[in-house]
Image 1 (cartoon, helix red, strand yellow):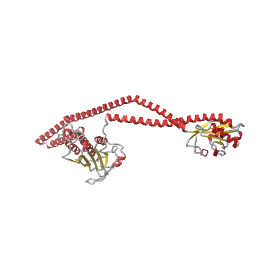
Image 2 (tube, one colour; image 1 turned 60 degrees about the vertical axis):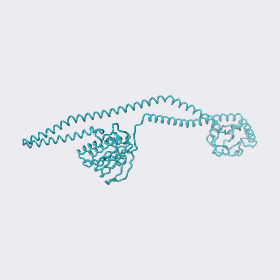
Image 3 (tube, helix red, strand yellow; image 1 turned 180 degrees about the horizontal axis):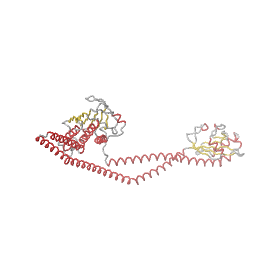
Image 4 (tube, helix red, strand yellow; image 1 turned 90 degrees about the horizontal axis):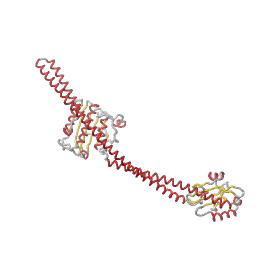
Length: 486
C-alpha cells in the first residue's frame, strides 16, 4: 500500500471507470497533464513586472482622477458658497435693509408691491433667481413668486440658527422641501441672513443663486488637479524607471546564479553518491564476495576431511555473507541507481523489481517491447515514480504482490503500479494533508514540471494503484543528445 498523505492535490477529478480487475475506487488526479510548471524566461519575467507596474500606474491615475473629481466639486462648492454669502451681504446691506418698512413686516400689500418693484429692478437677474423675506414664525412676507407670499412653512434648523445667532449661512439647497416647489432645476445655492425693520423687528432675507457656475468652476479645478497630478506621476515614473530596470537586471542575475548553484549542488550530490557507491562496491562488497568464496572452499575441504560439522558451519557463514552481499547491492541500487542512458529503462526497472523482491514483496513486471523513444529526463521521471511507489509498497503493504506495467496508450506512455495491500481512504487523507511524505511530494513536483499526469486510486481493503501518463508531445519535447542505443 502506498499510504503517503497526499501533497497538495489538485481538485479531485473522479473518474468512475472500473478497471478490468474490478477496482471501483475513483481516480484522484494529483497532477493534470496541463499543469506544466515551466520556469519562466527572464524576458517573460521582465514583461510581467512591467505589465504589473503599468497596471499599477493606470490604477493610481484612476484613483487620483476620482479623488480629484470629488475634491474639485467640494472646493468649487465652497468657493461658490462663500461668493454667494458675500453677494447676499452686499444686497442685504445696500438694497434690502434700507427699503424695509414696518408695513412690509405687517403684510401690507402696498409695501409688498413696492419691495417687488425694488427686487425686480436691482436684485433679480442672472446671478439671483429667487428672493424671499421671512418672518421669525415662518411666514413668507415677500417672494418674487407671488404664490408663496402669505404662506407659512416650518423654518429648518439652519434658518432658526441664522435668526438666533445673527450670521450669514450659505449651502447647496434641498429643492425637495415644500417651500421650494416653484424653484427651477435640481440644485441651487441658498443663502440667508437676518435683516431688521426700522422699529427693530428681525426678519430673514433669503436668496437663491444658480448652480451652473459651480459646475464650471469644478471642471476648471479638476483640470488643474489632473494636469498637476498626471505630470507629477509621469515625472515619478521617469525618475524611477532606471532604478526599477536596474533592480530587474539584478534579480535576473541572482536567478541565474541561483540556478547555477542548484545545478552545482545536484552535480556535487550525484558525484558524492557515485563515490560512496563505488567505494562500497569496490571495497566491502568485493571483500565479502571473496569471503563467501573462501568459506565455500573451506567447507569443501572440511567435507574431504570428513568434518561434516565444520563444513555445515562454514556453509552457513557463506550463505550469511551472500545474503549481506545482496542487501548491500540493494542499498547500492538506492544510493546510486544504474544510468538509464547506459543500462536502459527496461534494465533499470528490472533492477528495482529485484530489489523489492529481496524485501518481502512479490513483483510482477510487464514492460512493452514497442515503447516509443523518450527523452532521458522523462525516462528518469518514469524510473523515479516506479522507484517511489515500489518503495512505499515495501514500507506499508509488504508482504504483498505489486504489478508494475509500462505500456503505450495510443502515443502516450503509461506506467501503472498496483498493489493488493490494505489500501486507505485517499479522500480523507486529501482533506487533511498534515504530514506529507517527501518522496510523494517530489514525484508530484516532477510530474508537474514535466507536464505529465499523475493519478491515484485507492480505498480501504481495495489495494492502491498509481498511474503516470506521459503524453506523446511531452515525451518527445526534449530530444536525446546522444541517440538511442536501446
